[in-house]
Image (tube, rainbow, N blue to C red; front, top):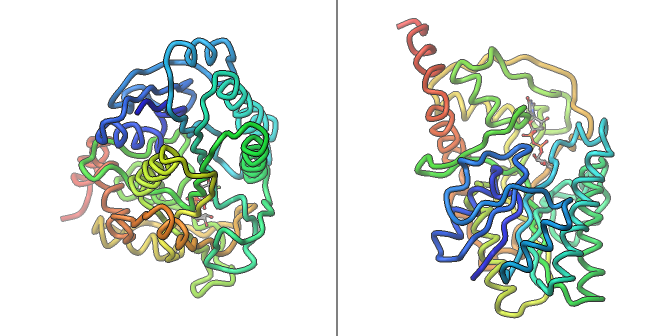
Length: 336
Ligand code: UFG
């Protein structure tokens, strides 16, 4: 199998490239390195470039035959999407359409799309299944929904088959420490809490304690990055078997509050995590938990690392591997 992974130098994409290579697929990564890292691409061919560049896409699709394209390259920060919608509509919509149009022109007919729980907006019920109405409450979610809708139209008109995978909260790292999360700036809860544990940050701020949840902090469904990659692999096999287009919600079906994540991290790292209370962050629903029954039954997807402790432990191994100096300083400064 020959797969083009767009955004294969990023957090989830790099785990995907590794998994595809493990399974014997031929992989080409296309990444503009705006947020990804060249050294995270552990296998296959690397092309430095942007999906906005139609000439580059034409050359790539002419030079080799791809069975499928996986698309991980997008802007992902909810707050930023409200402040800079141009960036989000340009990257996530216009550039993705450029990619789809090039695929169509060159007869590449299978596409796996990184979608998000943000397409649902404020949930009417949890856990959220695929029947839940899609009404995003921020530009980020709207850009992802637009592509989901375009994909339905491209299938109806051109027969382009796609699978939309709606991640809830991607977290964790490669279990053997080969890969992990390296966002700049980091905005996600688990890596931020781990940066406090390793001494790289003084404290973590809890965004709101007045939500309608048992401890007042937001509840999320954290799903291991390698389990997400596995879902892509299963979706690829399904498309190769001739299956039709589909969309699946991907999460473990259990929610953890911000406070619970901090507590679990303290236990795993055996460190006190200084916490400050801050105001709510705009666009944060109180509770996002996936009903992934459909992915279980139709994709045969069973997460290998469903428990939050394993997810945090893998991310902690990665944090210490990437920043051994702050880890050393921290242990020297710690009272014995
Ligand atoms: N949080 C804090 N303090 C922080 C960072 C986060 O309290 O310093 C809280 C957030 O308010 C939220 C929870 O921790 O309640 C998780 O926040 P993340 O930023 O880690 O993740 P999000 O739930 O905001 O975002 C994730 C993906 C998005 C996706 C969204 C779906 O990263 O791409 O889920 O709603 F859009």
